[in-house]
Length: 352
Image (cartoon, rainbow, N blue to C red):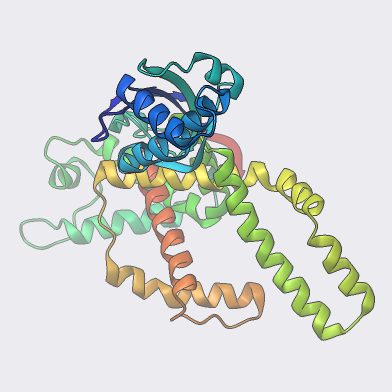
Protein backbone atom coordinates (compact mmCIF):
# COMPACT_ATOMS: atom_id res chain seq x y z
CA UNK A 1 0.00 0.00 0.00
CA UNK A 2 1.07 3.60 -0.46
CA UNK A 3 1.56 5.64 2.70
CA UNK A 4 1.10 9.36 2.04
CA UNK A 5 3.34 11.77 3.89
CA UNK A 6 3.27 15.50 4.54
CA UNK A 7 7.01 15.51 3.83
CA UNK A 8 7.00 15.87 0.07
CA UNK A 9 10.67 15.01 -0.12
CA UNK A 10 10.05 11.41 1.00
CA UNK A 11 7.63 8.87 -0.49
CA UNK A 12 7.04 5.50 1.18
CA UNK A 13 5.65 2.28 -0.23
CA UNK A 14 5.12 -0.65 2.14
CA UNK A 15 4.71 -4.40 1.82
CA UNK A 16 4.62 -7.15 4.42
CA UNK A 17 7.22 -9.89 4.70
CA UNK A 18 7.06 -13.04 6.86
CA UNK A 19 7.18 -12.78 10.67
CA UNK A 20 5.48 -9.36 10.69
CA UNK A 21 8.42 -7.61 9.01
CA UNK A 22 7.51 -4.58 6.93
CA UNK A 23 9.49 -3.66 3.83
CA UNK A 24 9.76 0.08 3.24
CA UNK A 25 10.51 1.13 -0.33
CA UNK A 26 11.50 4.76 0.01
CA UNK A 27 11.99 7.41 -2.65
CA UNK A 28 13.87 10.61 -1.85
CA UNK A 29 12.85 13.34 -4.24
CA UNK A 30 15.19 15.10 -6.66
CA UNK A 31 14.87 18.32 -4.67
CA UNK A 32 15.73 16.47 -1.45
CA UNK A 33 18.98 15.04 -2.83
CA UNK A 34 19.93 18.41 -4.30
CA UNK A 35 19.26 20.35 -1.11
CA UNK A 36 21.11 17.83 1.02
CA UNK A 37 24.08 17.85 -1.36
CA UNK A 38 24.20 21.66 -1.44
CA UNK A 39 24.11 21.82 2.38
CA UNK A 40 26.90 19.24 2.67
CA UNK A 41 28.99 20.98 0.01
CA UNK A 42 28.68 24.31 1.79
CA UNK A 43 30.22 22.81 4.91
CA UNK A 44 32.86 20.70 3.17
CA UNK A 45 36.48 21.73 2.99
CA UNK A 46 36.81 20.11 -0.45
CA UNK A 47 33.46 20.36 -2.28
CA UNK A 48 34.47 17.89 -4.94
CA UNK A 49 35.38 15.15 -2.48
CA UNK A 50 33.29 11.95 -2.20
CA UNK A 51 32.79 12.80 1.43
CA UNK A 52 30.23 15.41 0.35
CA UNK A 53 28.05 12.69 -1.16
CA UNK A 54 28.42 10.55 1.94
CA UNK A 55 27.54 13.49 4.19
CA UNK A 56 24.53 14.38 2.06
CA UNK A 57 23.32 10.78 2.09
CA UNK A 58 23.93 10.43 5.83
CA UNK A 59 21.84 13.54 6.50
CA UNK A 60 18.94 12.16 4.48
CA UNK A 61 19.10 8.77 6.22
CA UNK A 62 19.46 10.22 9.71
CA UNK A 63 17.02 13.12 9.42
CA UNK A 64 14.63 13.13 6.46
CA UNK A 65 13.80 9.41 6.41
CA UNK A 66 13.28 9.03 10.21
CA UNK A 67 11.13 12.17 10.22
CA UNK A 68 8.93 10.75 7.45
CA UNK A 69 8.61 7.40 9.23
CA UNK A 70 7.74 9.13 12.50
CA UNK A 71 5.10 11.24 10.76
CA UNK A 72 3.43 8.03 9.57
CA UNK A 73 3.98 5.92 12.69
CA UNK A 74 0.27 5.73 13.48
CA UNK A 75 -0.29 4.07 10.10
CA UNK A 76 2.93 2.07 9.88
CA UNK A 77 2.98 0.79 13.50
CA UNK A 78 6.71 0.06 13.39
CA UNK A 79 8.56 -1.47 16.33
CA UNK A 80 12.01 0.02 16.88
CA UNK A 81 14.17 1.52 14.17
CA UNK A 82 14.14 0.62 10.50
CA UNK A 83 17.25 -1.06 9.11
CA UNK A 84 18.82 -0.28 5.74
CA UNK A 85 18.72 -3.15 3.25
CA UNK A 86 20.87 -1.53 0.55
CA UNK A 87 24.63 -1.58 0.92
CA UNK A 88 25.85 1.92 1.85
CA UNK A 89 28.49 1.82 -0.89
CA UNK A 90 25.81 1.05 -3.47
CA UNK A 91 23.73 4.02 -2.30
CA UNK A 92 26.74 6.31 -2.53
CA UNK A 93 27.29 5.09 -6.07
CA UNK A 94 23.63 5.71 -7.01
CA UNK A 95 23.38 9.10 -5.32
CA UNK A 96 23.08 11.88 -7.91
CA UNK A 97 22.26 15.41 -6.75
CA UNK A 98 19.06 16.57 -8.40
CA UNK A 99 17.87 13.00 -9.11
CA UNK A 100 15.47 10.90 -7.07
CA UNK A 101 17.08 8.19 -4.96
CA UNK A 102 15.35 4.93 -4.15
CA UNK A 103 16.30 2.73 -1.22
CA UNK A 104 14.85 -0.12 0.82
CA UNK A 105 14.57 -0.55 4.57
CA UNK A 106 12.88 -3.10 6.80
CA UNK A 107 11.42 -2.92 10.28
CA UNK A 108 9.36 -5.09 12.57
CA UNK A 109 5.70 -4.06 12.56
CA UNK A 110 3.12 -4.40 15.29
CA UNK A 111 1.19 -7.65 14.67
CA UNK A 112 -2.25 -7.30 13.13
CA UNK A 113 -5.04 -9.56 11.97
CA UNK A 114 -6.06 -7.96 8.70
CA UNK A 115 -9.20 -8.92 6.84
CA UNK A 116 -10.65 -10.93 9.73
CA UNK A 117 -14.21 -12.09 9.12
CA UNK A 118 -16.68 -13.78 11.44
CA UNK A 119 -16.60 -16.98 9.42
CA UNK A 120 -12.88 -17.30 10.21
CA UNK A 121 -13.49 -18.18 13.86
CA UNK A 122 -17.13 -19.21 14.16
CA UNK A 123 -17.82 -22.96 14.13
CA UNK A 124 -14.20 -23.84 14.81
CA UNK A 125 -13.72 -27.59 14.28
CA UNK A 126 -12.92 -29.12 17.67
CA UNK A 127 -12.31 -32.68 18.80
CA UNK A 128 -13.11 -33.00 22.49
CA UNK A 129 -13.15 -36.06 24.73
CA UNK A 130 -16.71 -37.07 25.56
CA UNK A 131 -17.57 -36.24 29.20
CA UNK A 132 -19.20 -39.12 31.05
CA UNK A 133 -19.24 -38.20 34.74
CA UNK A 134 -22.78 -37.64 36.05
CA UNK A 135 -24.03 -36.93 32.55
CA UNK A 136 -27.43 -38.50 33.11
CA UNK A 137 -28.15 -36.43 36.21
CA UNK A 138 -26.86 -33.26 34.53
CA UNK A 139 -29.17 -33.81 31.55
CA UNK A 140 -32.08 -34.43 33.93
CA UNK A 141 -31.29 -31.17 35.76
CA UNK A 142 -31.14 -29.26 32.47
CA UNK A 143 -34.54 -30.59 31.39
CA UNK A 144 -36.02 -29.82 34.79
CA UNK A 145 -34.83 -26.23 34.43
CA UNK A 146 -36.51 -26.02 31.02
CA UNK A 147 -39.75 -27.46 32.37
CA UNK A 148 -39.76 -24.84 35.13
CA UNK A 149 -39.00 -22.06 32.67
CA UNK A 150 -41.65 -23.15 30.16
CA UNK A 151 -44.70 -24.39 32.08
CA UNK A 152 -48.11 -25.20 30.59
CA UNK A 153 -50.72 -22.41 30.23
CA UNK A 154 -52.08 -23.54 33.59
CA UNK A 155 -48.65 -23.27 35.23
CA UNK A 156 -47.99 -27.00 35.50
CA UNK A 157 -44.74 -28.66 34.59
CA UNK A 158 -44.94 -30.27 31.19
CA UNK A 159 -43.57 -33.75 30.54
CA UNK A 160 -40.76 -34.12 28.04
CA UNK A 161 -42.26 -34.00 24.58
CA UNK A 162 -43.05 -31.90 21.55
CA UNK A 163 -45.31 -29.52 23.49
CA UNK A 164 -42.41 -28.52 25.74
CA UNK A 165 -40.02 -28.33 22.78
CA UNK A 166 -42.44 -26.08 20.88
CA UNK A 167 -42.56 -23.68 23.82
CA UNK A 168 -38.78 -23.53 23.93
CA UNK A 169 -38.72 -22.70 20.22
CA UNK A 170 -41.70 -22.74 17.89
CA UNK A 171 -41.61 -25.70 15.55
CA UNK A 172 -38.77 -27.43 17.43
CA UNK A 173 -39.40 -31.19 17.81
CA UNK A 174 -38.49 -32.97 21.04
CA UNK A 175 -35.83 -35.02 19.28
CA UNK A 176 -33.88 -31.89 18.31
CA UNK A 177 -34.37 -30.31 21.73
CA UNK A 178 -32.96 -33.46 23.34
CA UNK A 179 -29.90 -33.30 21.09
CA UNK A 180 -29.41 -29.59 21.81
CA UNK A 181 -29.66 -30.06 25.58
CA UNK A 182 -27.25 -32.99 25.61
CA UNK A 183 -24.75 -31.09 23.48
CA UNK A 184 -25.00 -28.05 25.79
CA UNK A 185 -24.46 -30.22 28.86
CA UNK A 186 -21.43 -31.83 27.21
CA UNK A 187 -19.90 -28.45 26.40
CA UNK A 188 -20.44 -27.19 29.93
CA UNK A 189 -19.04 -30.43 31.34
CA UNK A 190 -15.97 -30.12 29.11
CA UNK A 191 -15.13 -26.91 30.97
CA UNK A 192 -14.70 -28.94 34.14
CA UNK A 193 -11.34 -29.77 32.58
CA UNK A 194 -10.98 -26.20 31.34
CA UNK A 195 -7.20 -26.25 30.94
CA UNK A 196 -7.31 -29.10 28.41
CA UNK A 197 -10.44 -27.79 26.69
CA UNK A 198 -9.14 -24.23 26.41
CA UNK A 199 -5.83 -25.53 25.01
CA UNK A 200 -7.75 -27.30 22.23
CA UNK A 201 -9.78 -24.15 21.48
CA UNK A 202 -6.59 -22.05 21.45
CA UNK A 203 -4.93 -24.30 18.88
CA UNK A 204 -8.00 -24.22 16.66
CA UNK A 205 -8.21 -20.43 16.90
CA UNK A 206 -4.56 -19.93 15.94
CA UNK A 207 -4.97 -22.31 13.01
CA UNK A 208 -7.97 -20.32 11.81
CA UNK A 209 -6.55 -16.89 12.66
CA UNK A 210 -2.75 -17.07 12.34
CA UNK A 211 -0.79 -14.14 13.75
CA UNK A 212 2.84 -13.47 12.84
CA UNK A 213 4.93 -12.29 15.80
CA UNK A 214 8.07 -10.22 15.06
CA UNK A 215 11.33 -11.21 16.67
CA UNK A 216 11.76 -7.88 18.43
CA UNK A 217 8.49 -8.40 20.31
CA UNK A 218 9.57 -11.91 21.34
CA UNK A 219 12.90 -10.62 22.58
CA UNK A 220 11.30 -7.79 24.52
CA UNK A 221 8.77 -10.08 26.23
CA UNK A 222 11.52 -12.61 27.03
CA UNK A 223 13.68 -9.80 28.43
CA UNK A 224 10.93 -8.71 30.80
CA UNK A 225 10.35 -12.28 31.99
CA UNK A 226 14.05 -12.94 32.39
CA UNK A 227 14.46 -9.73 34.35
CA UNK A 228 11.82 -10.97 36.78
CA UNK A 229 13.65 -14.30 37.13
CA UNK A 230 16.90 -12.48 37.87
CA UNK A 231 15.25 -10.32 40.51
CA UNK A 232 13.77 -13.36 42.26
CA UNK A 233 17.07 -15.22 42.09
CA UNK A 234 18.89 -12.19 43.49
CA UNK A 235 16.42 -11.91 46.35
CA UNK A 236 16.85 -15.60 47.20
CA UNK A 237 20.64 -15.30 47.01
CA UNK A 238 20.54 -12.29 49.30
CA UNK A 239 18.47 -14.24 51.80
CA UNK A 240 20.82 -17.22 51.75
CA UNK A 241 23.94 -15.09 51.63
CA UNK A 242 25.94 -17.76 49.84
CA UNK A 243 28.89 -16.99 47.59
CA UNK A 244 27.86 -19.81 45.23
CA UNK A 245 24.40 -18.29 44.83
CA UNK A 246 25.87 -14.89 43.98
CA UNK A 247 28.12 -16.50 41.36
CA UNK A 248 25.10 -18.18 39.81
CA UNK A 249 23.39 -14.78 39.58
CA UNK A 250 26.41 -13.34 37.77
CA UNK A 251 26.30 -16.21 35.30
CA UNK A 252 22.55 -15.76 34.80
CA UNK A 253 23.09 -12.09 34.03
CA UNK A 254 25.26 -12.88 31.02
CA UNK A 255 24.04 -12.39 27.46
CA UNK A 256 24.75 -16.04 26.70
CA UNK A 257 22.44 -17.13 29.53
CA UNK A 258 19.67 -14.89 28.22
CA UNK A 259 20.09 -16.27 24.70
CA UNK A 260 19.67 -19.80 26.05
CA UNK A 261 16.54 -18.70 27.90
CA UNK A 262 15.20 -17.01 24.76
CA UNK A 263 15.74 -20.17 22.73
CA UNK A 264 13.91 -22.27 25.31
CA UNK A 265 10.98 -19.89 25.70
CA UNK A 266 10.48 -18.68 22.12
CA UNK A 267 7.83 -21.24 21.17
CA UNK A 268 5.75 -20.62 24.27
CA UNK A 269 6.10 -16.85 23.99
CA UNK A 270 5.14 -16.92 20.33
CA UNK A 271 2.00 -18.91 21.19
CA UNK A 272 1.05 -16.58 24.06
CA UNK A 273 1.54 -13.41 22.06
CA UNK A 274 -0.20 -14.71 18.95
CA UNK A 275 -3.13 -15.88 21.07
CA UNK A 276 -3.48 -12.46 22.73
CA UNK A 277 -3.65 -10.71 19.35
CA UNK A 278 -6.08 -13.29 17.93
CA UNK A 279 -8.35 -12.99 20.97
CA UNK A 280 -8.34 -9.20 20.77
CA UNK A 281 -9.21 -9.44 17.07
CA UNK A 282 -12.26 -11.58 17.97
CA UNK A 283 -13.24 -9.10 20.68
CA UNK A 284 -13.05 -6.23 18.19
CA UNK A 285 -14.88 -8.07 15.42
CA UNK A 286 -17.67 -9.25 17.74
CA UNK A 287 -17.69 -5.97 19.63
CA UNK A 288 -17.79 -8.00 22.81
CA UNK A 289 -18.50 -5.98 25.93
CA UNK A 290 -16.95 -7.32 29.13
CA UNK A 291 -19.16 -6.72 32.16
CA UNK A 292 -17.00 -4.71 34.61
CA UNK A 293 -19.01 -5.87 37.61
CA UNK A 294 -18.79 -9.54 36.64
CA UNK A 295 -15.05 -9.15 36.16
CA UNK A 296 -14.72 -7.47 39.55
CA UNK A 297 -16.77 -10.25 41.16
CA UNK A 298 -14.31 -12.83 39.82
CA UNK A 299 -11.22 -10.95 40.99
CA UNK A 300 -11.38 -12.41 44.49
CA UNK A 301 -11.58 -15.98 43.21
CA UNK A 302 -8.62 -15.37 40.90
CA UNK A 303 -6.61 -13.92 43.81
CA UNK A 304 -7.42 -17.01 45.90
CA UNK A 305 -6.23 -19.31 43.09
CA UNK A 306 -2.97 -17.39 42.85
CA UNK A 307 -2.49 -17.62 46.61
CA UNK A 308 -2.97 -21.40 46.48
CA UNK A 309 -0.40 -21.69 43.69
CA UNK A 310 2.27 -19.39 45.14
CA UNK A 311 1.51 -19.25 48.90
CA UNK A 312 1.87 -15.46 48.53
CA UNK A 313 -1.18 -13.30 49.11
CA UNK A 314 -1.56 -11.05 46.05
CA UNK A 315 -2.35 -7.35 46.32
CA UNK A 316 -5.64 -7.03 44.43
CA UNK A 317 -5.09 -3.25 44.16
CA UNK A 318 -1.78 -3.72 42.37
CA UNK A 319 -2.22 -2.41 38.78
CA UNK A 320 0.03 -5.15 37.38
CA UNK A 321 -1.95 -7.88 39.14
CA UNK A 322 -5.27 -6.42 37.99
CA UNK A 323 -4.02 -6.11 34.41
CA UNK A 324 -2.94 -9.77 34.43
CA UNK A 325 -6.30 -10.83 35.83
CA UNK A 326 -8.25 -8.75 33.29
CA UNK A 327 -6.27 -10.29 30.42
CA UNK A 328 -6.99 -13.79 31.77
CA UNK A 329 -10.67 -12.97 32.26
CA UNK A 330 -11.04 -11.69 28.69
CA UNK A 331 -9.16 -14.73 27.40
CA UNK A 332 -11.49 -17.17 29.14
CA UNK A 333 -14.56 -15.19 28.08
CA UNK A 334 -13.56 -15.35 24.42
CA UNK A 335 -12.58 -19.02 24.59
CA UNK A 336 -15.95 -19.88 26.14
CA UNK A 337 -17.65 -17.90 23.37
CA UNK A 338 -15.69 -19.81 20.74
CA UNK A 339 -16.51 -23.14 22.42
CA UNK A 340 -20.21 -22.25 22.49
CA UNK A 341 -20.12 -21.62 18.76
CA UNK A 342 -17.70 -24.38 17.75
CA UNK A 343 -18.42 -27.42 15.64
CA UNK A 344 -17.59 -30.15 18.15
CA UNK A 345 -16.80 -33.76 17.41
CA UNK A 346 -16.96 -35.83 20.59
CA UNK A 347 -14.30 -38.54 20.68
CA UNK A 348 -14.29 -41.87 22.49
CA UNK A 349 -11.48 -40.67 24.76
CA UNK A 350 -14.01 -40.10 27.52
CA UNK A 351 -13.43 -37.85 30.49
CA UNK A 352 -14.87 -38.99 33.80
